[in-house]
Image 1 (cartoon, rainbow, N blue to C red):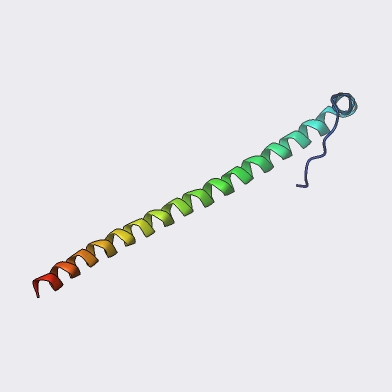
Image 2: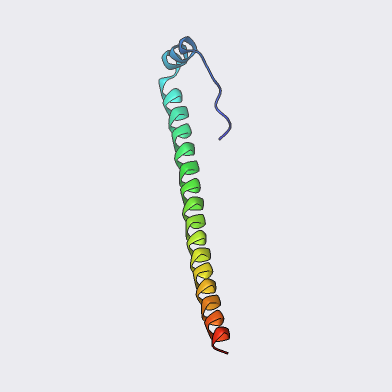
Length: 76
């Protein structure tokens, strides 16, 4: 899929009269391309969200370990 070409309303109507099926196929291809791009973006967003959650969990564990170490040191 290439980038879409902007046409005027008149140009669109002329193309529609000339070859309706071709216009419908072009629109369908553009919609499919848009859906594919959205799915890719959603997948990347979900993976990033999972990664952030993992990092948050790791940070919480490190904070807890630091507190435990500080308590143990204060006892000594």
